[in-house]
Length: 107
Length: 340
View 1 (cartoon, each protein chain N blue to C red):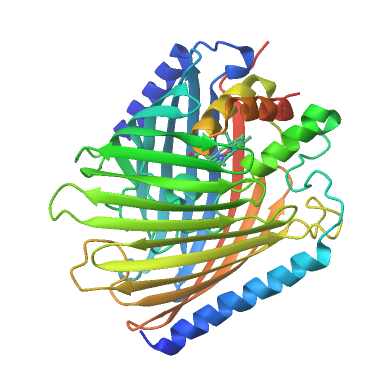
View 2 (view 1 turned 30 degrees about the vertical axis):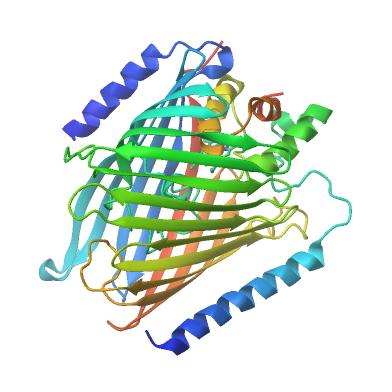
C-alpha cells in the first residue's frame, strides 16, 4: 500500500462530500413539504388523495423506506398488504407505521 | 435446468397454498431484469440477468419469500477468436417468516446472511446503483451470501426518535448445490434515527467449521432529510483481510423535481479499499492491497427503468486497470393473479 494512494482516496471522498453538502445547501428549502423523491407520479392513487393519512404515509415512506430504494411507480391494491409484510421483515416497521404505509400505497 | 424446474414447481405449489386472508394479500412476483456489459482492460463481456422474487403470505402471520438469480455470461475467448458463454442459476433465498410480534420475526430456511447490509439490501439488481457489489461483499459469508438455518430478527426498541433493530442467526453446513452454506453464527445490531435518516450498525459472524474465524462488520447509512442524496458505507474485517467502501448517489430536485429530465439524472460515486493482513486467503478479497474508485452516471427513465454507466479505476500492486460498465435494469412488480 503506497500511503499516497490512501491519502488521495480520503481526499477524493472528502472533496465529494463537501461538494454534495454545498449542492444540498444550495437547494435546501425552508418549508419542508412532503419530500418529493418519495411521492409517486400523479397517475398513482396515492397522490390523488391529498388526505392527512396520505401525507403521513409520505413521511413514513421517507423515514422507513427510502433509505433502501425508491417507491415503485404503482402498487396494485391486491398486493399492498403482501409488500408491507415483506418489507416489515426487512425494514422492521411497527404495526402502526405499516398501516400508514399501506394507506399510502393503497388509499 | 432441472434445479430451476424444481424451484418453479415449488413456487407454484407455494402460490396455490397461499390463500390470501385479505384481498390485498395476494402473492406477488417482483424483481429486476437487466442487461449489462463490462469491459475490464478492453475486453467486453455481456451479462443478461433476471432476478425474480416471490412473496406469498400464508394466513395472517406467515410469509414465504424466495429469490433466484438467472444469468448468462457472454465473454470473449481468445482461443476461439469469439465469444463463449456460461449459464448461472442460483436460488438466493427461500425462507419462511413467522411474524410473531412487532419485536420478533422468526425466519427458517435459506436466507441472505445478515452480516453488514449490502447483501440484504443492495444485492437486488434494481436496487443497487452500481452494476457490481463492493470488493468486501463476500468477506464473511463463504462467498455464497446465503445461510441455511434459522434467524431471529425484529425491532428491539422502537420510539419516534430512534429504533434499535437486531438480527441473530445460525447456519448449518450444507454442500447441497442449491443451498450452499457454511456452519456459522452471528448477528447484527443497528440503530436508526428516523428524523435524521441516519443508521449505524455493527455485525459479527463466527465460522463454526474449519479454522474458527471471527468476522466484524460495521455500516453507516445516511440520507439527509428532504434531499435525494444518499451516503452508504460499510467496513468489514476478517482474519486475513479487511476493507471498506463509501458510496454516494444523488438526484437533484431543484429543476422541477425528481421526475423532470434533470431530476432523473443520478451521479454516483464509490470509493473502496481492501487490505491483506496476511497471505492465508480464506476470503474472496483481492490478493494484493487494492483501491478502487467508481464514477458513475445513471439515468432513471419512466416506467421503473434505469440506465447505469460507470468507469472504475483500480489501483493495486498487481497493476492498475480500468473498468467500464453499462447496463439497463427494469424493475417489475405484479400480483400472481389478476383479481376481481
